[in-house]
Image 1 (tube, rainbow, N blue to C red):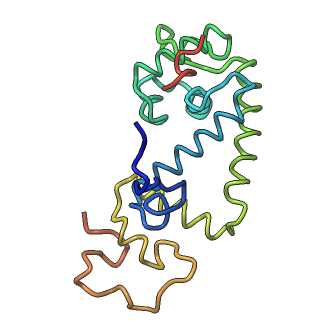
Image 2: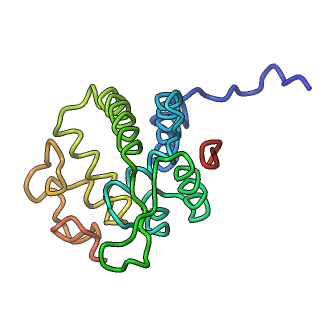
Image 3: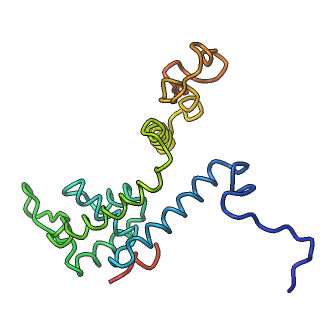
Length: 200
């Protein structure tokens, strides 16, 4: 069925409601999707997907971590993590080794091959991160990281984003946001898978 000639054309990325006029939540999701797509391409020839990279990273960073904790930290479902770990184990990337104290408990660990693969992935992801932050100063990056981390924690986001104490590069004049009617305390608080997920 042909579209009417006067039908509105959907905006491209960064335009209209997909740009500066859009909701912050949508823009975050859009940016995350674009980043995921880029990472997928960067890791494709290593036969690693972003979820697999996330699992490998968490296993390496937190020895003895459980599948449930991997799922929570990597923002994946427990079922997806179970499939990924099983497939990585079949591929010789991870192994289950006895716990140092509780021998009957098997913990997940990277094999030497897994360590080497993770390092290759890290090199590519770091290059992508450098490209992503290329136009930002270290101070600006710090503000963005603090803001994003605050969103994840559920902090008083509006308060923290407005205050020099929260890390703004150019803080407002002293006392500019210290009124009692803004709902914020003076400390900046508010007073309160895809194809690779099952790849063998």
